[in-house]
Length: 467
Ligand SMILES: Nc1ncnc2c1ncn2[C@@H]1O[C@H](COP(=O)(O)OP(=O)(O)OP(=O)(O)O)[C@@H](O)[C@H]1O
Image (tube, rainbow, N blue to C red; front, side):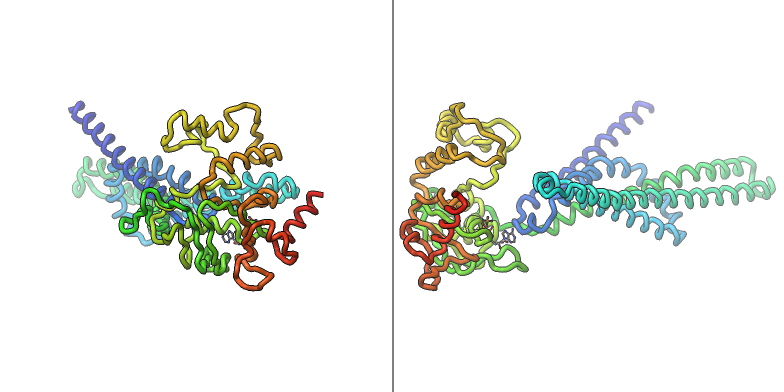
């Protein structure tokens, strides 16, 4: 009999662990996929702390806390006890209040995490502007708000426990009175003993079961919050579109055409690229310059379809908005301003999908002067010195000789040797000289000759700063 009991208990444990783990993993994986396929606007409008909170605190509740609180045996007990509790109208109200407190406690944590992550990212700015005290104060305030909710939640559960105890004691008192006052002829002494012992046990069980039930209900907030992202997040366009498969060797030439291209980041934000109309020839080296906020980086955003265009863009005659995102992005390369290094070996960072052999990797290292230890790479955030800059420019010139290359330049000298220069101004490429939407798009020497061109103005400003 004991062996059977042990076996049954083991089966129950195994089954329960399997069910809860599978459910938690499924929730995590679905949310992860959803968030990863979300468009840029989602990340623009959702604080990083909120996403971190979902993946840390909420996921932890679903992984570890909920399965413990929801033991199937408890569910049975819960069912019985809830029947008693629902008789009273007061308890559902109490339960709801406790649940509300827990919800508030969960919500109040996100701003704390957001502030911590944004402070870590902007630490140098905080030091530069000497606003440490202000940030410390802000953190303390947010922490206080979070602690208040936490305290309220705990007080709420204690308050509920008190009334449950009170109810159980009242019941025990009533049963005891009844047992004492009733004669042995009406109720036998053994039945009296049984009634008393069950009533006394009720105090402990009621307390335990109701506390567990409120915990389960409150912790289900986390499931709700995960579910909110799973069902509420809008995904990007499909990664592959069967009907619009591009050829394996696309793009052969790399001619990029913008046709009356318009773009805004979100519905409620202004247009940042306004009616662009120009063609970049295949294999051309194009330097893109312009004042800050003129829309240079937005051109890259447009090509990678991080934001979906209002009107089309063509690469070698293919409308890029009609093909799958993976088909498009796998054919483009970007060297961003802030490179990201993943944890792992240099090899993993160079070739995360294991597509190249050792020789090819060494050749890449050689081209970037990483194979030879003359070069010391300083911190990733440090600016590149003139010597390294020249080496990199040299490598880029040789390695990407056949590629169409768009170089967004913050130092105008970097793009002085480009085939043509594209000057952006307020999301447009306007030739001030002719006052038409014909691009200020020409060879650097030609643009330099025009005294009223924006390029000449930018060059003059750069030279003044250098002196
Ligand atoms: N994620 C975004 N959401 C909303 N608006 C944005 C976003 N990114 C840029 N913008 C806006 O789009 C406009 C063009 O910005 P963009 O970054 O393309 O300019 P830029 O010329 O590359 O500037 P910089 O030289 O400072 O990098 C600006 O008005 C900017 O405020």
